[in-house]
Amino acid sequence: MREKVQEALNKVRPTLQKDGGDVVLIDVTNDGVVKVQLTGACRGCPMSQVTLKEGIEKFLKSEVPEITAVEAV
Image (cartoon, rainbow, N blue to C red; front, side):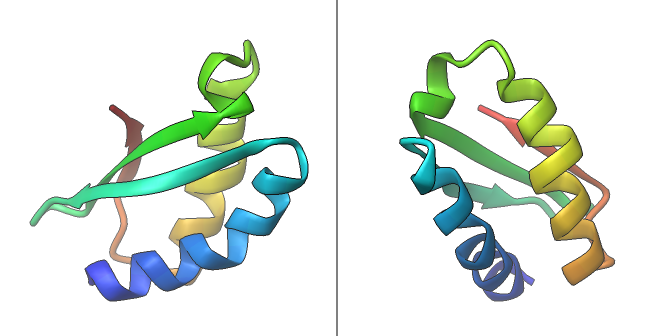
């Protein structure tokens, strides 16, 4: 599952990079929780939680249905 998540993140990454940010995959737990680290402009952005939940999480769940949640670490 980790490989599928990484492939999906690679599809999201260019959009984040356009705004000076990025996302790094830290872990995928056995129960489907994806742990990521937002970097660059995304790290300190006040909208980072919206980006995480409404952008990254929704997209990952559509690409990898086994995902239950996405968390920033």
